[in-house]
Structures are given as C-alpha cells and as structure tokens.
Amino acid sequence: MKSIFTLVLLFIAFQLSSQNESETKSAVIKAEHLITYAAENFPSEDAQQLYILVETGKAGISPEDKFYIEQGIKLLIKRLDDNDMIAIGTYGAISANILPFTEVSKAAVLQESVESLFKGEFVAMTSSGISIAYDMMEAHYDEERVSSVIMIRGVGIDVIEDAQELMASANDVKSEASSTSLYQGTEVSSRDKRKQEREQRKQSRAADHKNLGGAIALTALTLLPEILDVIKD
Image (cartoon, rainbow, N blue to C red; front, side, top):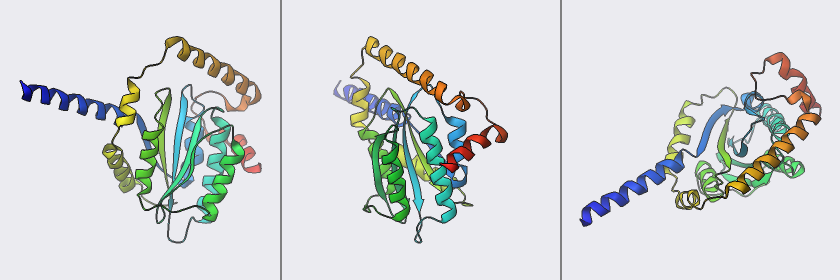
C-alpha cells in the first residue's frame, strides 16, 4: 500500500513539473531577425512576459548586432501593451540580469537598460545566463501572461546548438513556486474584468497606432514604414 502511495506522489510530481515546463515558450533567433520577430508576433491578444536574453562575446556586442537589438526592442515596446513585462539579461562570455521584469509603459527605463547592455554597465554573475532567465521566469510566474524567453544570437551564427541548450535548460528548471501558483486560482469575475480593461487599452492604442494593425502576416513592404519610424526615433 505504501509503495502504491509513493508511486502516486511521484506521478503527481512529474505531471506538475511537465505542466510548468510547457508554460514558458522558448525562441532562439539571430540579432538580425529580432525586428521581424517583433513584427510577426505582436501585438497579441494575450498579456506578455518576455525575457530578452542577449549573447555576449569576449569583445562585447558587435555594432551591427547593437543596431538590430536596439531597433528590435524599440519595435517590441511600440507593439506590446503598456502592462506587458520585459526583462533583459545576457549569456555567453558574460552572464547577467540587467533589467528585472518591468512594464512596457516605463519605456525610458527599458531604453536605459539597453544602453547599459551596450556599454557593459552591469554586474556579471557566476550562474549561467540561461539558468538565470528561467529562474526569473519561475519566480515571476503569472498564469495570466504568456511567458517567453527570446535568446538572441550574433549575426551569421548557427542557432541550432543554442536552441538545444535553451530547451535543455527549460527542462531542468525546478518549478515548485510556479506549480503551486497554478492551484491558487483566480476569481472569474476578476479575470474577466482584467480582460475587459485590456481590450479597452488595445482599442485605445489601435486608435493611436493605426499602422500597427492586428496579428496578420506582414510583408516587407507593409513593415517598412513602421521600421523606418522606429529607427528615426
């Protein structure tokens, strides 16, 4: 009887772990593709929580990569909802968490963090940058948001190996806090109210940014005016 009870507990623990691992989406892209990624995936009907994880080499970040990263993050800020969250960190030669999860409405803080990233004005950590990212995702788990780690590699680098490392790190993350939060529950009325408020904000933003449109397949021609506008800013 005791052995059966133990097996049941192990099965439940495995299910909770597997469920939480699927809560965080993972993407590995080249720096040159960040602008396209932002344009194709946002705006979204779901609240977002993004961890932008940037590769650092021994010589820092190349000028070309800095351009793509800066403009890509600007476009993300423009297309995300004000209450969406962004965190920024590094991996590779230097691992660090540069910015904890911050609301998109605080655009100035986000831009300052990007500058700190480029200037190297942050404290390096001994842990793996990928592990830091997933630890933060676990600590700030929110069932109301879509959580994603966006791993940005340098220009012209094969992303396959890092994709495998990213997925392996995701599978290694322990999720007691996140699993517990799955069962804390949220009142339906409160959740519906937040959805209504979010929809109102989306409609207001749509009036101010008609060129943003919805989540449609964007061609290079339709993207060009918006990207040029971001670069000019």
